[in-house]
Image 1 (cartoon, rainbow, N blue to C red):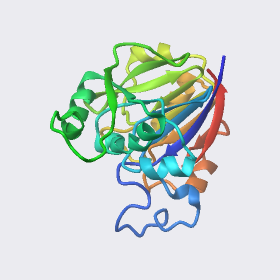
Image 2: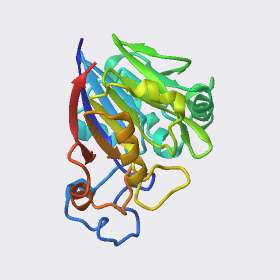
Image 3: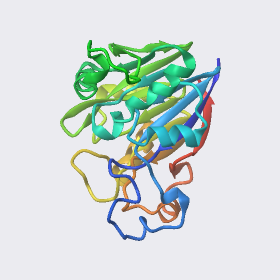
Image 4: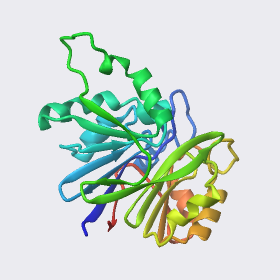
Length: 257
């Protein structure tokens, strides 16, 4: 089986860190790990590249990661911080000479079709448009020899998806993991999960809640993502168990497929 090489493209919230107009200690931090773009994950294996969510920062993230091909995009849900970079698949279309498949649940596909209606318009245009295939997720996906399993989650009262591939799971933007999803999270090497802040939030997991989930799921290693400016990287890491770390932009991990 191939090895999965993971890159945290973005570890921040919808407003990013630094946040516009904020002068808090984290937003003014000199630690580059406190600079967090919007949430996204890159999975590379066997010469393939799969991205989970195209944030508004996707162009910058792809350049920073040295991403020179894109084979598929998986979407967790249709919020702006997870989809608005979709237009930046165009350079990959041009370089690869092919469409890029986009996988999402029906609700997210409806949002993508509405937000990016110009992509699907029959009207001729002289402009370069993304060339994509929108495909509905209805179960596990075999993408180039690796199975990606959707993991149902609740983001407040909104149904969203996480994804498991091999011995890795990526769960961003959730407040609750439904009971039926825990069986999809057994025997993990790496769990990447939402931990917005310490203070409770109606649609996101907190540090305390996510630590409880790590204890229940028992991955070998866990990494917190979708982090707001309440949590300084170094100080927060210092109070976490040794097998739980704060993710940061450009963090690279590896595990079995």
